[in-house]
Image (cartoon, rainbow over all chains, first blue to last red; front, side, top):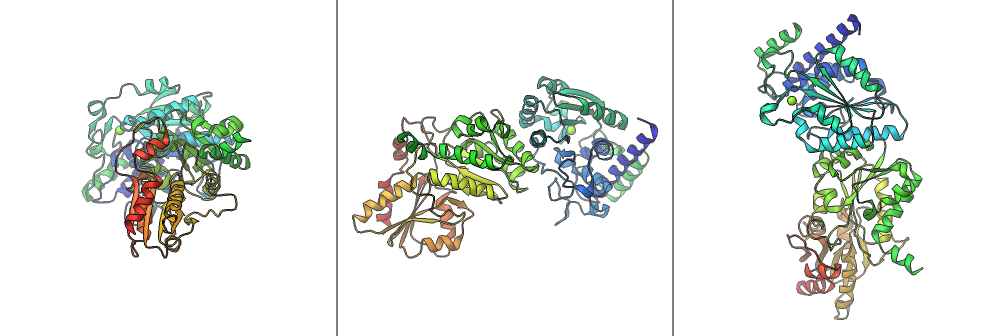
Length: 273
Length: 313
Ligand SMILES: [Mg+2]
């Protein structure tokens, strides 16, 4: 990928991060850490890989993105606003009473494809969408972003089995492997072993990438789209809270508030990335 | 000929044929099953329209969420397994992924109530109507016979949103015909009477009619009212169907908590009648070698219904 393209995507990722800070507001609890860790992945999906357009939201051939780790929807809201699905001024109203932007994704929000938030369900929804695409002979792709903590949900592995059985090559799961969950480090709280190994055992082709390297993300998404005969899993090494220096690699900002002073520090930190 | 007649009595057989007719007419109708398609009769789709059938293995949670994904892409999925597994195991998937976004997913709970008599408590379902009724956007149907099953399938398909259909495993007497009205939300008077009313659905309809026979011999006039819809109920229509009687007995093959009796009582809360609720008394089932023996053990009989009417009058 050429440098201009990488710079363009890095700038989009920065806008996503600033949008997350906007959506968080001052003094409201929100899921900063997991939103920041997937910001680069979400930016590359919306501004490089996916076939989508806010003008053609109902296009049956559009690619679908499901934020299965629904608490990280702040990243998706920021990307959707940046892509023009709704005005950026809406971000600041996230989670306020009556807002179009709820605490977890709901389908009535423009650009949100599925309700998620009860963890472990999004990959199954993606299986259904991929089955429908095959049935209708449409060439859209389905992308599902899951968290590493979320992989403790048994339904993930039911879905992994189903996608393997049906050889859903139009389905890609991306694991935001930030190594942290709500109460601490995943390896200490609830170690789940090799994530690529697990998906491979269910018949998936797996990739491992640096989830903050936009070129690595983009090129791997391209490779995944070329795989035939099985679903693809991209395991992305990420840093929880990436870009906000005081929130990195800690569960403290899994769901926490920013003071006015923190907010200024966070903006400066993201701007300096 | 005799064989055909037997088949017409069976709600499962009627269901499979109705779904097949629906799926033949609309290729967006798809069936999902969790390794029970022979029993639930979604095998009709697998056999005749294999492109519209998805075997989902023994994984109910994934099956329901995948159905949500199919619905989000314009399909009308019918999801099948036994009632206890269709509503209990994937309750969260139904709540979060189907009912909250009001998706066009139909949940079909087969072998409901005690009707899977041999398999015992784990496979019997007295909670399914309560679980499904509490969910906003959900329509809950419990057709009374094989004829109504076919109508319920068509009605469910016409609703743009989630529907739960409760099916009995065993043959049931055929009490309606093609010309009998079937309207979601409206109770149907099966037999007239003015002293008391018996509210029924599914297997209890035949019992209610038998109780009416017994009581008419004793000079008591009983109306039998069928409730194929548990939710949403048209309160006006319910009060009209039950007007003029002095007492009410509800009879259901379900827990007395959260089913037919509760739904009727809610409709009559401002104009209450002396009411007895017959159903499973807040307990679990067990195995038996035949259905009738089990129904009797749990107090679901024409005699028990007749006794309850007499006590109230
Ligand atoms: Mg994590």
